[in-house]
Image (cartoon, rainbow, N blue to C red; front, side, top):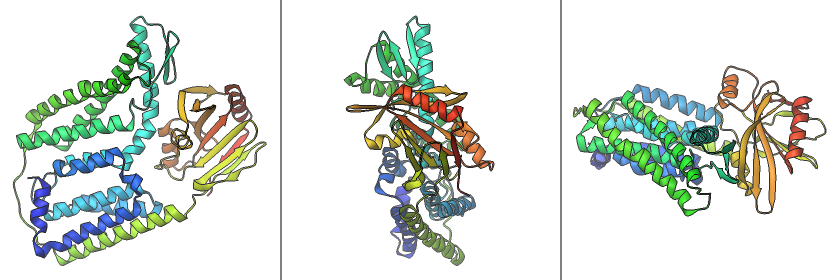
Length: 451
């Protein structure tokens, strides 16, 4: 039965208004901790719209100790490090804990929905979306070359007969990927409602893994078609081609895939119900969790507003470091501008140049990887009306230089010295190259995190 109907039926009873209060306190904590921009992302709004449709009960009421442990773990990390992502999951598991206590066991589909609508999903797409776009460019170039076309691939740009085709953020970007995954949630929930059958956790894992693969394939075909039909960015068909590919190569296959998986692996929903009497101890525990949720939300907001992250110890020959807000160190001369952002924890979302330069009105063009003195780094062009800049970035802890997210996160997790994001920008490509060779070749840059 749909949870929304059960929820309304349950809470109109006057002797259970305290449950409404518990949930209200949790929501209040989220309202304090999260800015409007944090919850107004398209995947968050779509996820909230799907919640009443996708959450279904599948068994008797229970105390879910797994959710309780998740609440305590996520809430503790959120409080200690003032990380909103962990706080989001702590609140989500808190509300699910209440639902299962008063309404019944919730089907595992909701866990996937929460993952896809969470801030963590945004971070994953930002971190992985860019290298995937570079890989898609390479694959598309190989396919077109195999078809007999003379095409040259440079990073995310493909050159065909003098015309440049850029693999932009619409390919494996947040909106496209989030829409596909949330559409998968909707299609599975639709099958749940029409066939009265459910899928277990592992079949759902397989289903959404296939959603990701279909999304990658759809974007690859989109790139190939844009090049074949010479559809440049800005053309009306450029966006329409993306929508067409998503509908034809993602949504339609998912509909039939979901229907087949429900028929093959679906099991009936459990209709067992056994209303629980919430003990005094459990009520006191939930009240403590609700108050802790509000307190943690206030703490996160305070830390975010009033605490300035620590800066790394930075030395670059010929430059004087200047500490800025948010743990950023700035250095510049007439040739280059250098930003160094301290990364506090291995799970942190770093302030990638792909985001920060957009805030200054620039757009990225011709992004690729290059090798400087044996070190692989990212580089690209920054375009703004009347101005073109050349920029490069990588991650370093003073001894390891890398652009691989897994490498620096695993090293920090294993206790290695902390990493920083280094971003070097110049007015010409030649100047940037010269300065990068000086930095790497002469070990001119020294970085060490605060201890």
